Image: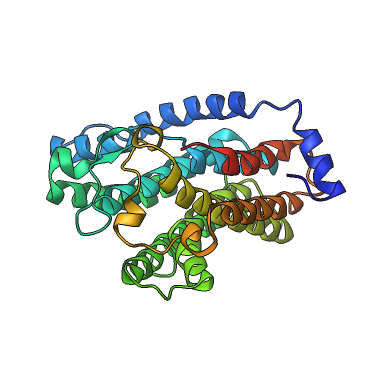
Length: 309
């Protein structure tokens, strides 16, 4: 859905750009870097548990966004890859903990048994903790050819993203909202802009910072990321209703079972799709003035509302 002439230009610019090829190319690089980032140490069990979930596959969208914005700003893959890996470590931690019985209680993730079903709840908690701590160490010790002040900025943003002002805060409000019938769109937006959107935003912004983005460019990319982050969650809510377990790689219908407030429960499925597309359109508008190097970001925004899992 294209609503403005300016957006028509952006979509036309992506016509010769293959998102599938781009995502596959970058995913191969990310998978290799992730595997190299975490060797088996002692005690072996905790490293095996950490690697089990970290290397379980997935879209790798967050690290790819980090790489894309770093390149957009004139940086290189090598400059951004440690942070890209750290973002996936943090994301993986959130999935391990989210799947625990005390949280969303799921047995499958990405088509495989969840960490606690394989290693037990105690080791799963520690595996998540280990990945979270290692993420910061990895950025600090492995980032090369980047001014120290940029690295410090990225580390600070990662810390805020994962803490009470970000992911943790969103998760708490999400848990407190289960079973309540008076959750409005504003509260739901707060939950997901923190629980899901914050890490997506930091993925985009951190790559830009490492690449040397100016303050105005960081602000525009931040707004882009906020919009795609909320659109991502709206589509997630829809897929929880419409997709199968096999398509999702996890148990479908969990939101309904847990009596969670979702966008379809507030707006219905069709209106939710419309709202997601509006957010994507707004995200693409923020990329006006960037070169064709922003085509990956434009295409990823559109992909978010058409994905099937």
